[in-house]
Amino acid sequence: MREKSALLIIDVQNDFCPGGALAVPLGDLVIEPLNRVAQQFADAGLPVLASRDWHPPTTRHFREFGGSWPAHCVQGSKGADFPSALLLPEGTMILSKGTTPELDGYSAFEGVTDDGMTLAQIVKELRVQRIYLGGLATDYCVLSTARDALRHGLEVAVLFDAVAGVDVQAGDSARAIEKMEAEGVGLITVEELLEKLNGKVD
Image (tube, rainbow, N blue to C red; front, side, top):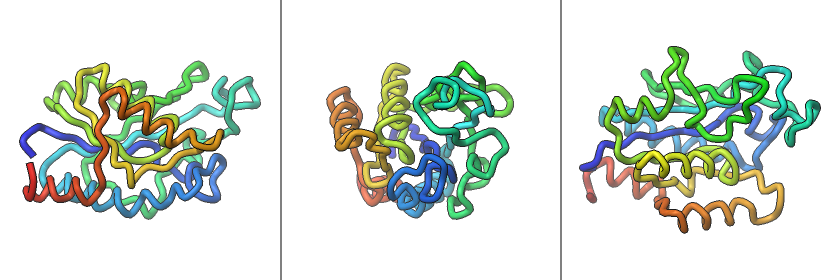
């Protein structure tokens, strides 16, 4: 691929997978395709990033304290961990978001690494021009991150067969995809991206 690209895996955590505190239906099905893409990015020397919800026990984000959601992805809990099946390559940069009682943390651009770097700083430092997004959930964190990526001047593409949504209201995920497309986000399959990475297409 001619442009400098990065892969961002969004919030693939135990609490968002089946059996978790805020399970996304079929959320675990994104893991295998994301593993393949992540390894190919790493093999090509391209950046791999992963965001995670990392909420304190008390936060306005949770229903118990006036928010919209049941408690999930509490800092240091098993639910906040990445699933063991998710094979993040060595050197993957982890961004934690929603880390204070005041922050919802829908967008990965609200996250920071352990050493305090934001996603905006990372993509600028690495001269990333295009970012590929996959993970959970289509209708919330993927949508918010895609919109912020566009605001930061990046080309954005969603791996639409490696995302899954909450669908609080039926059709929310489909509507989120439509919104992203209308705003300039590209859609690509995992296989199409792997072909790009392997140099079979531009």
